[in-house]
Length: 248
Image 1: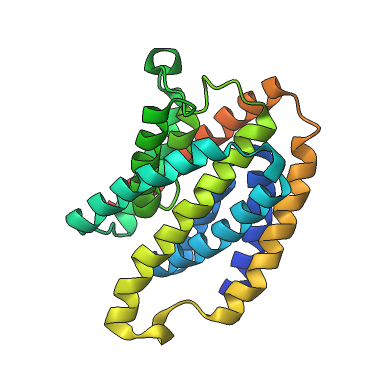
Image 2: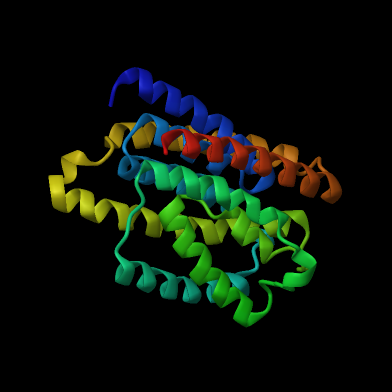
């Protein structure tokens, strides 16, 4: 990996981890788009997965007292269904399809949530979230807006929402790394994976950004938190849709 590209990714990973530390998503969307522009799709997925797994895992640890473990266990069980479906379909998006997915995913925040009546604290909804979010996260790299739909009607505080989403996304990104790494290793060997030194350098940077973002989270009100999150991911979605249109 060229040093210039590595430095750009490291800088972006800090900024996006800071954003995710506040909103629990959005940062991952930005990072995925930047990675896809700089490296092949498979490498982008692996790097993104490693950084987001570290960032989400660290965020989950910092907010571990607020995690709803019952929800997580149900989500994890549902994610197995999503993994099985992906293995049966055996399709991986190219760069054009990836940007299209990245552009459409944030638009999920505009679905009429009051009519969907989704609540991840309900057992069946948690299983469904695990299956759907895992599948989308593995193919598009991110699935925060879809996961967010299941938290709208919960009675969780913003800390509980971010903490529980973080631990579910730690699992989702771990699966994504495995899904994209296996074909790369099979085709070109371990040497074709992103260099270990880069991942090791990026992880503490992402963790620092997450920690700083968490400080801002505690200073926000629930109203401001939800309003800023919706607007931010919408702008990101339009940018990626324009990028996809340009590639097509």
